[in-house]
Length: 212
Image (cartoon, rainbow, N blue to C red; front, side):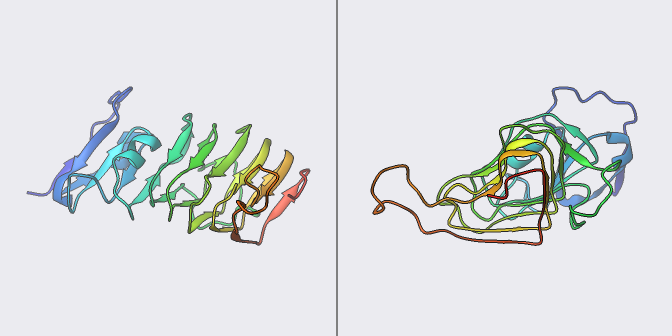
């Protein structure tokens, strides 16, 4: 039977996974869940989707290629994206340079570390993340960072020595070291151990920040 999951005012504090919709046979009343994160590729549950209380819980519980959709609201977690998932904020697809951030945003208050090739981060607001707002580890390939609004940090988007990356339609404000930084240097005096990187960076707006 098709059923409707609707648990108004339920307290999901400290519960990592809220619902697993096995076989996608139930209707989920998302309005009653408050803040939630939905994944459409769930480890151990083929052909199902699941709802999580945290972004990290959703990423960890998802398989490669999952669409991980984050509801509007504030999420206070230092996030590690260690696999190739498509991480979509509530305003995914909306240009970070021009959109209104006054409401309806998925807000990340702490930095994001990308350790999974093929990851795509789209449509979040990071009003004051500090440190390196988004850092992509060395030797990672095919990472996309787009439609982000990033406030004061040391480095807004740090590609470190990521081999390939695509960065577009981001607004970066108040970075103290660099808005976007790419790198090939391995930190030694020799150039023999440096890494050739090939990022594509376009359609960006940088305000009160060194560009690179």
